Image (tube, rainbow, N blue to C red):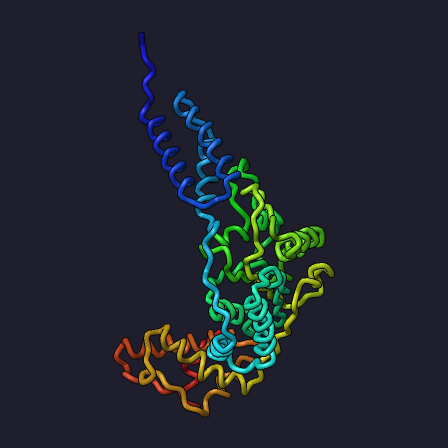
Length: 360
């Protein structure tokens, strides 16, 4: 009697299934979800033993790999220290004292609630929404909050969101399906309680119908009454987002729904004056630019009288992005001169600065 012998391909599939089972058993995913996944693998196992291979194998293996990569129980140890908050904010940002005070006040309330072990109230805190023109430091301010709290940081560019499916994910049966941006952000930080910046939320799909759907979905993400059981279409299992600290940034909030605005603690970011930009350029940007281009302080210097001349060609710029790009270009030109042995030290002053300015 002929006995069916599994092919090499089927044996390989069975080995992969055992690996997936091992991964699944090693994570602290909810029991209900584990049971569902193990049933899927059991179905695949029977198919492989019968010599049958289908697209379902790829669908299920991809799905389980996403499931086991989610940090179901892993959290970052949060630091509540208002002095640390002020130190980090002052280290990374010049001026903006009103904004820093608002953030410090917001985090002080969270600290008091945490010390009283009122964790539900901590999770129900309003969402910081920083509003202002481009380049004034909204993203770096959000990063500073994460640094001060000792939480991992991730930025989701909402301007690239053109569909609710990019937030919620697509059904795993759809070819090429993946989780949505919220679940991916948590996976990439590796903890359940990261700081996630929803950057430029007002730039999510400009089509009015889609924008309304996106705002409704964001309310599910941000509202503590709903976000304890957020359902990503790909995972198809309720996910608790209440431990995530979401921060929203926007250039304007006129397109936000009233329900969403009700959940936000709006902090308006003022534009920088020219005097403030000079201090930022000298004390914050220049040291960073030197380090990024491999130059030390003795190799690249700027005279004190040149800053106003560097700022002037930029015209009106509410933030510092143009200024940073200008300094980066100037530093690269200086680096080239030093590498080509034309000099071992570049001093930029009012007599030569124009030769170092980028030609746009």
